[in-house]
Amino acid sequence: MNFDPTGTRGMGFAPHHTQVMGARNSLLPVSIVHAAAEKPTDFTNFALGAGIQCAEAATLGMPFEVWKTRMGRFRNESTLEAFGNVYNKGGVGAFWAGTGPKMVESALKGAILMFSKEAINDACLGSGLSPTTSGILAGAGGGVCQVSIMGPCTFLVTGAVNSTTNESTMSRIQRTWAANGLKGFYPGGTAIAFRQATNWASRQGFTEFVRERAKMSLYGNNQAKLSKWEEAGCGVIGGTLACWNHPFEVARIEMQSRADAGQSKLNMVQVFQLVTKEQGVGGLFKGIVPRVGLGIWQTLFMVTGVKIIKDALGK
Image (cartoon, rainbow, N blue to C red; front, side, top):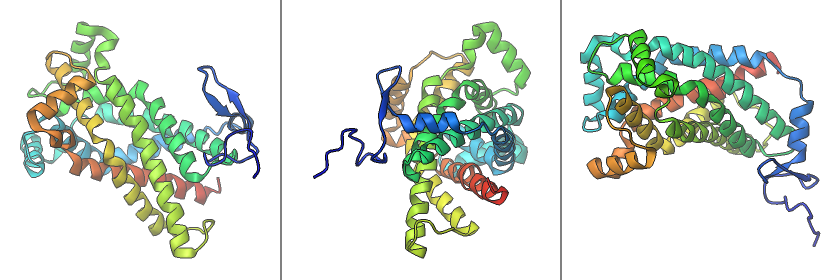
């Protein structure tokens, strides 16, 4: 029996890896650090991420987002009832409420996600980690990096969707700034951080897991190349499975809606308690149908679509 002094066998690391002590006493594979440092920075990921995320949001992304956001706040409404109430508020155009701040958010978060996620993923793969493990780590890291710019933008979109007035985006910005300054744009920040980290860790990780299984099932070779339709199918499954974290999204919507309406502030745990008291555990999954649609749509763009484009470009 061979002794493994690094203790990395069975954890997704190659046997030859050593580990170094991080700033917070965490153990990091030194090969990941070396791989990240040696790989040249590819700034095309900024443009690619911004463009793809804007395309995602401008198409079906916004209607799913608006529909889901209404259900997260008005949890007494059924799925179809919420859809109808969005339409009654302003016709088809109501499904694109808050598009201005959403496009800003999409461009920035898409660029940040692509740059950070792909850099982490490449470094992990280069260090010998499996595609699934690399996808989970890369997705989580990329999701956390998005939070800084998503707080204000999601707050403005949530206000536009759930407000009972027709207040403009600029008016909402001025009112929020006058009342609370910069921190006024970050209610629900904790919920956003949890949601984004688990969002992309799950979407990237589940999709890579399904891809590996699909290669073995269809071709008997984990190095086989999947067709575009097969890649899309893996993305659909990955995006659907990633919606397990929907309670974080319900908490985010409630916290931001309360802040926009001037209601008392609740932290994430208090929101969970409030929702389960009013609607039971099922209330934490209100809006899951449009969320699944949004999760699939975003995964097809930001995971499957990115892979197809990068393969086509030979990157």
